[in-house]
Length: 402
Ligand code: GCO
Ligand code: MG
Image (cartoon, rainbow, N blue to C red):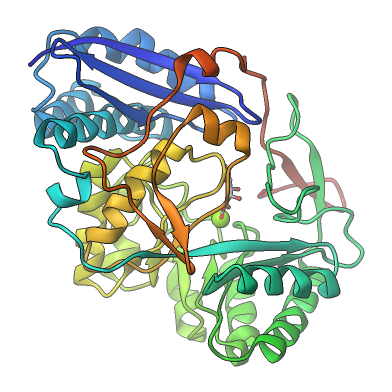
């Protein structure tokens, strides 16, 4: 079998997505997500100019060799653009291998380790009263884990609190929206929110919170300590993670579990965090961490150090990524949690898929391959629209982390 074509599909059914579709001479096709929020066309161009020409004529069965060829062959290793492009190829090749074998991809990864994939939803609201209603809604839908983000009094906008409750889409304008941040107000407010949520919903519901990289290690340590009575499942991205050893300081002070890694692209971005046991969950996922092949390497290393998976699953990760992530989630020994933000109906139509949600769990497709596709005709009806992620400033105008 040989690869005869590889098409880069850019579409915007409510938000932008980049998808690679690989075609073979025997008519078997495979898809891979290549979406990098706010930088979509950089990956599309990397694929079109530098990757697709190398794929034509290759044997699609050689997944590992193709991965190494694209990774080592680029010379410029790592980085979100390169790794998302490699991920798209890798994912599409696993899809093809599954279809050729007549098996869902999770069977090729060792088969099931669990009945289903526990997911968490997003309870977002401007006020504590509203967020309690949102948490209740998720609990009623069967969710066993909920991420709670709430407006901070005195701040006009807060990360995670969108205009629409169901689809939080931060990339909202061609030129980045500017938001304003105040650490003191935030640190003062958040523990009181979790006190309310925990007392209303009891000890069983898993609660999570995303700091979105906005604190310093000592501030994060203070927040982690203040949240200990409310037994969070994780505190996410407490600090920017370029300085991996910075997490030691957080660790010395608090038992609140830490989740990091949605912006990581390779095992090297979390090697120290994992081997020094500085985190509890690693949030890398298929599209931004080099595909199924590399993601499994990260999770295997993590397994040795009691670190569990907690893959990113916001709406900018397409249904193709979600389909692939579920095959990994259901098969690995050290699965933790999977983020699940629902896509819009338009997105679901462009990417027909057969994973399904029931009782707080997602179930991967049982079809051969990944069980997801891209409807290219429908995709063409939604042209790309530039959309950038916001930036964040302190009240005195200094640039801060978004
Ligand atoms: C999350 C993330 C998202 C990101 C977004 C960026 O935990 O879901 O932090 O909200 O900001 O996916 O592309
Ligand atoms: Mg996050």
